[in-house]
Image (cartoon, rainbow, N blue to C red; front, side):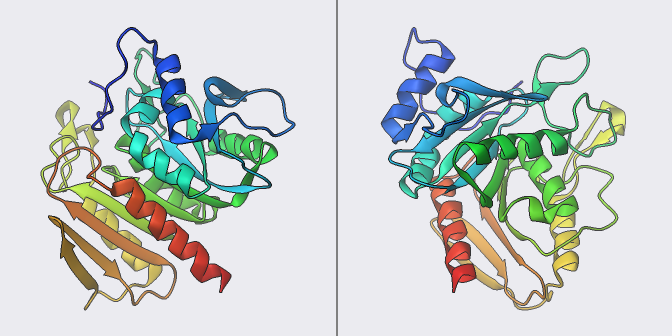
Length: 294
């Protein structure tokens, strides 16, 4: 069954891409006006080596703009992510950010789209190379390559963790949702990195403690083990992190880190995005950008 995020209902009788197009227009996202080959907007995918992606530029974009690169969940699509996180992508547009939505590929013999998550199984595509290609193409169309927030949901979120660990310089910051490392966990990560992880306390699809499939042949990692590995990578002190709880959520920020930043947001819900999630991480990303400019 595909990963599900609480969704804005699709208008009846409209195919997925048309519905996504109408939604994107309402969000203030437009067709890229860059002089590269024609593609962009919610109905015309950009084709690159290895796959396709949607590129939506903010209205009136002039010059290179920051971007939100979002990886959909297992079994979903760029259009599905656009529908299900409409409010979040509106927040990105209002912040003057482009939205980049690549598409995963199915494993051999299966139809649902997936990402090359580090879980001990082979995958038909090198997704590190694919996302490099996507970002190189998006940069030609008006995206500021050094100002990218990489986010993703579920399996997409797990691949965000993989990239943040292995190639922290790929994006300026990382915001995975409901997905962390799979077993076997990496032996170590590179750094520094800025990472904001969000997870549901009652998530049963990707429980905080993980779960196994196929008689233990494939195992989701423990989210807190992922956080421990990243704390060690960043040199975060284990004592006295900043804690806060508002609106039913619980937040922890490790402030005493030698390299990078690490934050955790737990919410009472299940496998999905809590209200205001994307707005929160967009605000967090903007704060990082302001701090780096000072």
